[in-house]
Amino acid sequence: MLSSPKPLASLSSGLLARKGQARPAMRPQGYANLASAGDALGWNDMGDAPAVAPAPPVLAEREALREEVERAPAPAAIHVSVATAVRLRRETAHRRKAAFTLRLDEDRHLRLRLASATRNRSAQQIVTEALDAFIASLPEVETLVAQLPPRKKR
Image (cartoon, rainbow, N blue to C red; front, top):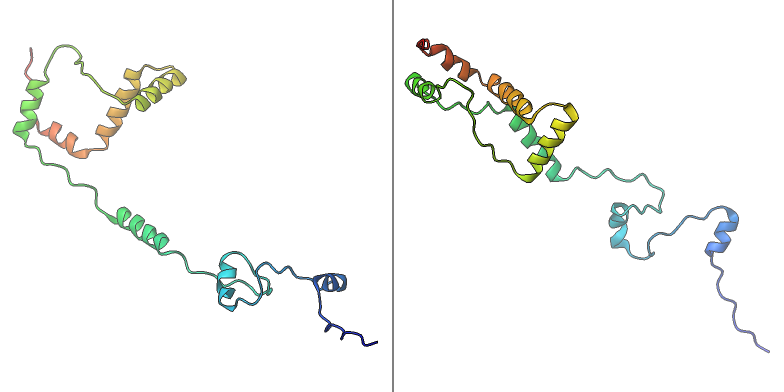
């Protein structure tokens, strides 16, 4: 009786595992053109150190934009004449505090109310303090105020 030929010996994953030589085959073998794509997907079944990919261009663009913004000069102030400042003083002269309407979107209004509650201060106090800080950051305003003629006594 003739027997069929024995299959050629092959190393199966079971044999390799028993020998302690097993490595996971995370991608199908035989696709040579996927070798570089495998590393990009986190597959590295060859045990080689992964190549460091260059940073995406968008990160370099963001860094360049951040540096450009930091180097940019502050926006130029709009020139206001002393005559205009005098007219504005005359138009805003009154004996008591002035009132005006401040329109806020829903989110800002909520945040202002919460800030008022958590700090135990009125919204008026918070907005006035923020306005004072903003005006103090504009040196041209103080320059104009210094150039105004003194107020007339009432």
